[in-house]
Image (cartoon, rainbow, N blue to C red; front, side, top):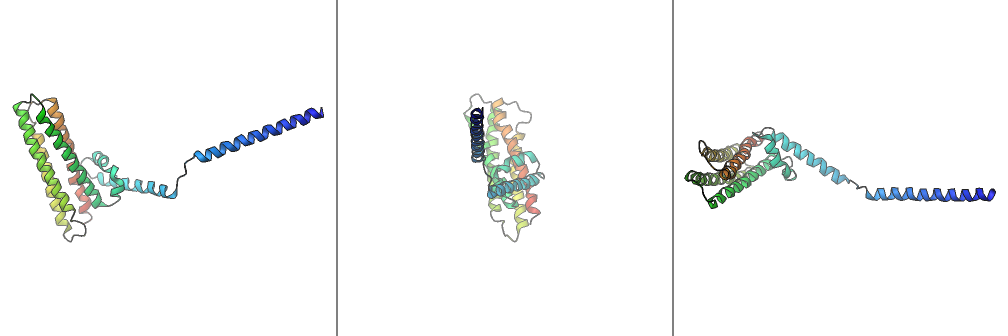
Length: 215
């Protein structure tokens, strides 16, 4: 009987040690697999949140707030909370979209079966969007000289003039469609893309207030 008891105790003790080993191993594996968050990572995350909040607040004054935030938030780390950087990026994004629009229009020349009206629209829109790109580039050139300038308000007005001219040229293109019968391809590659570009340009014009308030 005593031998049986001793045998049971040894068995029970071995089982407990085995359970303790398994439990300790599980804890160790859990510790190894749980990613540690460093202080710098926490700080960076908080900074990105601050940057995006700054962009969102600025975009609330834009003509199309959601389009504004969508186009700029991906550049939050570059913009930080600097209004001038915000506007430079806004111009850059708009010029990039204008070039894409110009390319989209140029591809239509290869389409067969375009009517005389459609070819006129393609030609005129190619011209006006080219003008818009040049005007946006002019505004970017002025923007490059704005930091530390004594006549900042004057430069801002120059930028406003260039951006407004670009928006007018984009509108001239979309006006070509009024009362005209055009194919789906022409409508898709010109009117829709130019309307999207116009939203970005309009937002650029509205975001100038972030610079005006700082000048």
